Length: 314
Image 1 (cartoon, rainbow, N blue to C red):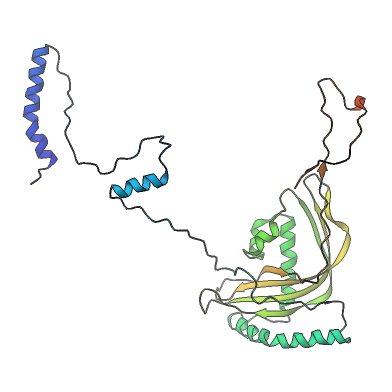
Image 2 (image 1 turned 180 degrees about the horizontal axis):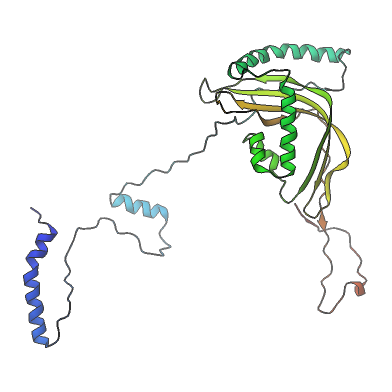
């Protein structure tokens, strides 16, 4: 049977002391401490040396498996956010020529008939939403949606991230703030040309059957102003003094099973027949002459060449 380390040391103590005394008497010197190597438990895995560059991670794993160590399997995990959905379920298809065709015309009557057909599924979704949110009303909700839209854009122009997170979902937030770094935004809501109204309602579920989300599409026709300035203070897009008529289809969402959930801006539906946006005017830099020490730019009579090679600033 294997003996303990304490019993082994106790057995070697008198022999070791006797050997030390004999060696000291022969050398005629003072007693000095002597280290006696004693074999301990055998190590099956020796850590690699410091600053070893030729050892890759795969080689280290093979060596650890050969030594009997279990290497944990690496899992690629993706975080799941259940406070909002990843997109718009069954998005509303805006009729072509909306806000331009009259209901008295032939095309306007066709669009009105198609909207009545699609409203059947919306009525069922409204009933599900009212089961979890008794205060929901399709008549009073458009005013709330318009106020959320105005407050969210006001927080975006002021770069108030805390307030913006409370007004928009986690899906809508990166879409609103993308590309706005080092830029100045000037946005204003002037008036509403038509009363906002609910045009589409859906109540999908995600992950499980009872995990319901309410998505309401609101049609809003308003007059707004927008001006975007770059980091040099030059106008890139829009005009602060020129209001424009904007027709938007906003999608608001709420996690219905969450008792602390609230309606937040989730996205925007852009119809295929919408006119293209105005191009963005970017600032360019034309390279000038290379001045030597002691030279002045005014004395060179330098003429600006054609901007063949320009450097774009984003």
